Image (cartoon, rainbow, N blue to C red; front, side):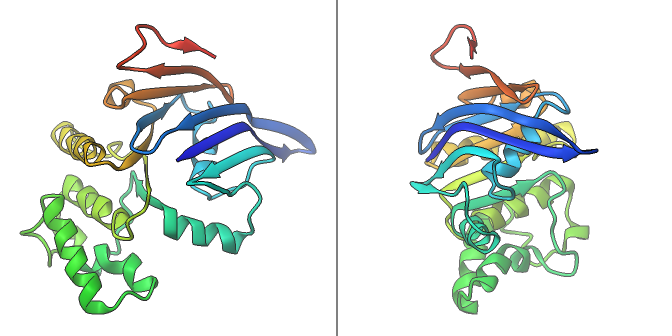
Length: 233
């Protein structure tokens, strides 16, 4: 699903080159549930932007679902994002004037899916995430956890092979956090490849594998069900 080889990303600040990410390599198999963890400033957000095709690496290769996306144009990256990645962000990013059903159907509308088909699939997805009774509620009428469920349904609307969740529980109360993590667990058990970016180790422990980023480098690669101790990279 994901193969990253010697990935680097540097920026120019005040005329000097600053390395945000250096020589990062790993592979994530289809159906895997992995968490990328690290403190603020570690480079995990830079890595998330690269994996989400929101940015391009300075050096190295990124293979997503069999395609090298390392050096694609902005237009090509946009197409890859639409076809291969479902995004779930901390702030949900729902459109306030649209209902849960309309928010979920929005990516399909932008891709030209006929209205009847997209609304039918959106309804199925909302039932799937436990919001079958909230189809016509707008975001302001939903709790934070319910809004995040809508965001997850929306992320699944175009059948992406990869679900990328960036701090999906960061703004939620403890019960909503547990509910969303349980939903992500279930989606992975159903075969979805899931990549979670978080600074919270308790959240990361839900994943089968943890990739720890420190100072722009992959410091540990920990398979929770196989390794007794983290692997030092």
